[in-house]
Amino acid sequence: MSTLTIAQEDPRTPESRALIADLDQLMRKLYCADACFLTAPEDLVAESAIFLVARDRGAAVGCGSVVPRPDGAGEVKRMWTSPAARRRGVARSLVRALEARAAQAGLSALRLETGVSQPEAIAFYEAEGFRRRGPFGDYTDDPALVFFEKALTRAKESAA
Image (cartoon, rainbow, N blue to C red; front, top):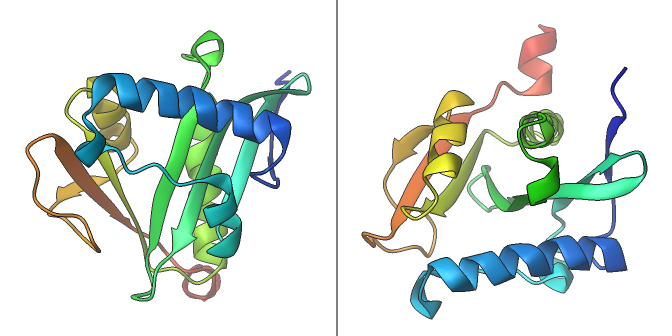
């Protein structure tokens, strides 16, 4: 029986901030400042993001968000699974929950950027059906960055 739960939470709680801080620490270690696009918890609230937290036996072990964009797509931000919880399906459950919520919100696609120093993340997104694409939004072409997109089936379309 699975003990994993995923729910919408406020990104400003201490547990959410701790997950985000762990992610920030890794990003700063892997990439130069120009290739780190770190969204603060307050910005996620201000941008009406979907912010989900994965919990195992009540402990926060992962998070992820989708920030709606003016073009009708959503950008995946702040995807993180704590090292102790990896290889147990937490990230897969999180990204699938984000996809479902984004589709319910009427978003047409999910887009994201990750980096070449994260081959596991690249392989994960490819396995989840994301396809490589060029830069989007305010991003520029940078050899350290890899961009992905996945079309979503809107809730209204799937019900038809």
